[in-house]
Image (cartoon, rainbow, N blue to C red):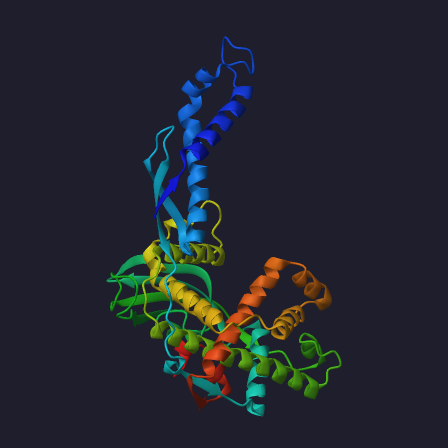
Length: 422
């Protein structure tokens, strides 16, 4: 976009700034505030004009895009093509715009919706899982069994020579956890505290170390101790840890089932939403503004740094763009498609759903009413929740036209991530 600005607007702004500067400029041989204007212009004129140009071009650009009803994506680049005192300024603004998104038919979206019931056996299995999570280990003098925790020293030898990363002392290992390469943990089963043994194993073909892929090695192992897993009893003390104060077993099971139902609902909702978004992304193909993609890449970089605890000493820009580009493109595309659906069908945040979402979040805190009041008095937090609710409303809107097929499955399969389902 080429933009013209009258000379008077630029020159007037330059003169104003120079007069302001004249009042505070200090130069040898002149009293404060008495430096001649010609000297101020000679010394500071170019710098002041450049400063004014930056402001004028930015303001004129905003006026121009509003006049032309354009939607810039990202920051523009400016280049002054005519820039002489006393003459009209002319500059070129280079920028990307949001594309016009033509919505595809929503009946092209296909969704497989999990349908599952929570059986009594599922509840019992969940209780066993809770017991496992609160298990403790006790030292035993018998031979190690699968499920035991052993403390071991080991040294790996390849062709009789120790190899890097193949040795450790005092390492705890749960037998059957699959933490070590195939054959390693099985070789320890049956060993007693104080026993030493050599085991022969072969590294997998897909092992990360090129030198060890598919290689046969020997591990010299010493078992220092064996500990058996002790599961807690489902008694009053155990139930109290989960909010059941009176130790009533049926109430405890009801509470477990309630939590499982919430988990199932969230899992099904998440899988359906993921499929809807996949369908929308596949159904729409248009050029993306690179500025939007870069914004998404920067957001994902920062998110990864937070997840891995990156501090100020680590620069997020060191993470390569290509690591995030494909996901960033998908996210940017979906953002534009969702916005187009919201605008075309005039979908606004449902106040009742927003309130329900706020209350659901607040219910996890000791004083939920205080959190509810805080969210509604904090526009930024409220806007985030409204955005999440709007996404859910878009999903519901798409589902009205999408091809939805229900698929019965077990509770365990229904709550698994999609990429882990059989």
